[in-house]
Image (cartoon, rainbow, N blue to C red):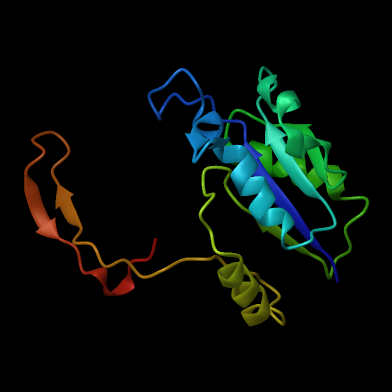
Length: 160
């Protein structure tokens, strides 16, 4: 059984509110994308497929892209399209019993131990799973138009 990693990274930064997409913002002196990919490479995937915006040329300048395990594919306009493109790019190599880990480029602080525990927990699963934590923050529901608080949500079944 092999592990394959897929990293959707085709965002343009529109929701982030900057001209430079968030994956290229610096985090302790290195772009977020480099930190995320370096972290995922610690899992020793068969390949790490990064789905990039077709207009993004910055990725070519990243030293990590020269790692033979890192592959670039053209992402889509929505996250699901980018994930699909990346998975399709490994379809002829991956086996049915292999695992595909999908990890957003903007999550560089994930702990490898947490991913390994997730993989161990799901080793016999036919469905897969998601890495999440129960939330501890208070969550308020607001009316869409007035923005007035109308409820405090029960956190017992909410995860981030």
